[in-house]
Image 1 (cartoon, rainbow, N blue to C red):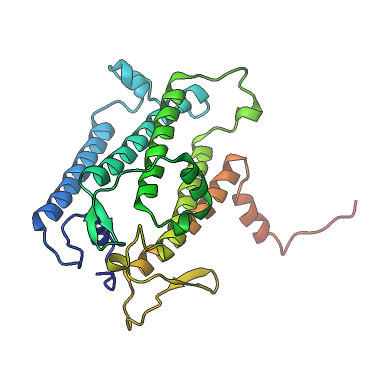
Image 2: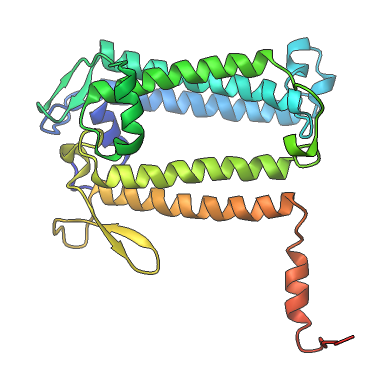
Length: 291
């Protein structure tokens, strides 16, 4: 499977869904169930978007539901932003718990034994701390799940903290007064997701525990041209491994996300890019004065 340009199916195989250890498709019903759940979810999101845009008030503050009014975005209100951030963190924490429990109860594919097995998370804090620096070469599924379990604890605790607390002291420029805006928060979001995409690219390019060779192909070689890129270490002719697609697409998405972060961060700080084009167009008529 790893020598085919697949992305979604190798991830399902890693989770122990639909395939045996040789990459043979054995569970059509399980894969179909996952596909149907995604289709139903996409329809629910689409319907929700249409309902909010066509039927509900454009101003959450005018909602008849008191709880909904708390989620009205006020870009320069830190109490509002921290309240909404807290809920996002809790959802991320719950997702981590689901992943850890799936590995513990159902099992995931372990390339060390070439089979699906149940994985108990390791909450050894010294291991978790050490893997901050060598996570690219992590080779223990117990440590992977332990990291996710610890992350779930941090995210849920942090989410509860952000929901329960409010701004302490005066809201000064040092704390973001006058800077918090839709543009600024978009820039920070792009920085975060861009950094994660770059890290995921390096991780998926070389790690064979989380990204088994059977499902994603052999580890890649890092090359440098106009920018870094990864190439297959096996000759597949004009084809590429799933790992090559995964690593390179993540890297370039991450690169452009970070450029978007810089663009929107500068705009949030008041930089007007239109003045740059205006200045360039006036170079022929511009003059320099020594006064």
